[in-house]
Image (cartoon, rainbow, N blue to C red; front, side):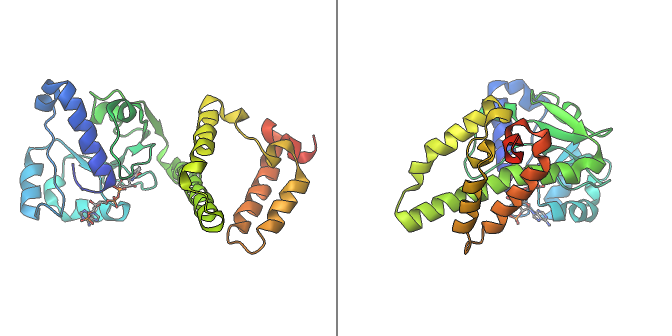
Amino acid sequence: LIGDGRLARHLHHYLALVYREQPALAHDYPLMHWSRRTGDGALLEQLAATADTVLLAIRDSAIDSFVQAHPGLAGKRLVHFSGALTTPLAAGLHPLMTFGEQLYDLPLYQSIPFIGEEGRESLRTVLPFLPNPSFSIPSAERPYYHALCVLSGNFTVLLWQKLTRELRARYGIPQEATLPYLGQTARNLGHDPTTALTGPFQRGDLATIADNLRALEDDDFRGIYAAFVHACLASAAESPDLRPLLGT
Ligand SMILES: NC(=O)c1ccc[n+]([C@@H]2O[C@H](COP(=O)([O-])OP(=O)(O)OC[C@H]3O[C@@H](n4cnc5c(N)ncnc54)[C@H](OP(=O)(O)O)[C@@H]3O)[C@@H](O)[C@H]2O)c1
């Protein structure tokens, strides 16, 4: 396992939890860990010499150059975890999850789907003892797939950060006050994404939408609200919960 960033820490912890439950696996699949912070090139070559598989949990832009710079990796089964990168040098296995500062528990790690590339290594061949859901998509689809992940996961975080920042700065409302709203939104989505939407878009309440846009006139996020109106109008015909926007 290469790297000591967020994903590497989580993968390391996940495997440690698995090995604690099933010690025989630690014998069958011994884990060696290297990062440029804690080891040098000579140590990497030494570890790589005994490894079958190298898990490259490093920055997307460093993956190709890292493989090319270390001849000891040639002939190994090389895997990276980027959702966006496609490279002949290593197969992509993207964990459909966000990995922050806090470590997670075993059931959560085991529930994370890994999205591979059709015709290349999958989670089942790389780490066959893990029970995680495993899917594969065509390599050419990865840019679109990853853009969807960023749109949904990262952009919602930016929107919730905006909410908590503005409520605190303008009205002194603490972050904890938003948590029930956030939690219920996530639960409603988990229950049924097609019925989770509420509010003026779901009601087709164009007057309130126009009011919201006016209220955001001097706000950097006005363009984001307007872009949502544009995108939702364009897809409303195929989305039952957005059809009221069209007055139908
Ligand atoms: N975090 C997530 O939520 C998430 C989710 C899905 C997939 N991923 C994927 O996981 C991979 C790692 O992301 P991350 O979030 O863990 O990033 P990160 O926290 O920024 O860590 C990046 C790691 O890459 C190392 N690195 C960067 N350049 C290097 C180089 N030239 N040689 C050796 N090591 C180098 C860094 O070492 P230094 O600390 O020494 O710079 C650090 O250990 C990426 O492919 C990312 O797309 C991440």
